[in-house]
Amino acid sequence: AQSVTQLGSHVSVSEGALVLLRCNYSSSVPPYLFWYVQYPNQGLQLLLKYTSAATLVKGINGFEAEFKKSETSFHLTKPSAHMSDAAEYFCAVSPNTGNQFYFGTGTSLTVIP
Amino acid sequence: EAQVTQNPRYLITVTGKKLTVTCSQNMNHEYMSWYRQDPGLGLRQIYYSMNVEVTDKGDVPEGYKVSRKEKRNFPLILESPSPNQTSLYFCASSLSFVGDRGQETQYFGPGTRLLVL
Image 1 (tube, one colour):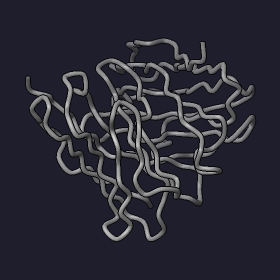
Image 2 (cartoon, helix red, strand yellow; image 1 turned 30 degrees about the vertical axis):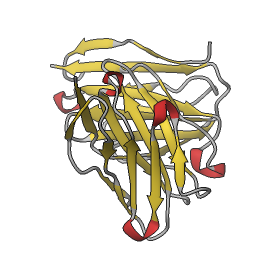
Image 3 (cartoon, helix red, strand yellow; image 1 turned 180 degrees about the vertical axis):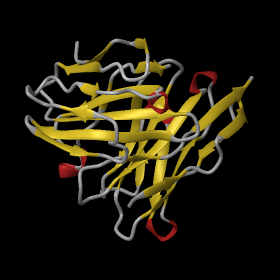
Image 4 (cartoon, one colour; image 1 turned 60 degrees about the vertical axis):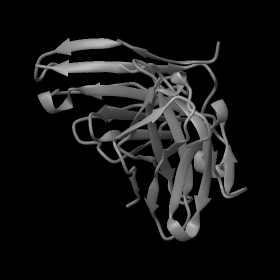
């Protein structure tokens, strides 16, 4: 079965600092990869997705992620954190054969003024 | 407005009392799915449906049932709820399965918070 590991359940950054949220997957064949954001008391919203096209994926709100097959990673970054980025972030995978989704356990991002 | 709706948003019930959480989407999506979210465990897929009358188990299907009689609706049924099913539930839909062409985005409902006493 697929698995997704998000290192760091809580990450704090200062406003204006780099945001780096880590995600590693376990699969011998690169799956489809996603990052979702969840604001308090809301559902999930897609930030970006990797679907075997460009390895550097740009998403909404200035976020981007790079697919690295050799490291089985799909880390999420943003050059400069805003207060509005404070939320829970989930990495997810979907195998390119099969119809299921697997989510990581989430990383809560705090932005310090 | 394109959206996924869930009802009820909050529900308190007792062990063994059957309940249904409804999910409806107005985007003519084929793929629909249910997840539960628990602290420290992230989201786990319960059931999904590729299209009308086609459903399949996700990671944690035990204790749940689903049906897909119409494209727009995908209710989640707990025939005999237990306290370990206390959770936050999300329904989601996409035009087709995300992996088919890798292009489709999943849209999530606002969530249903369930407490089973």
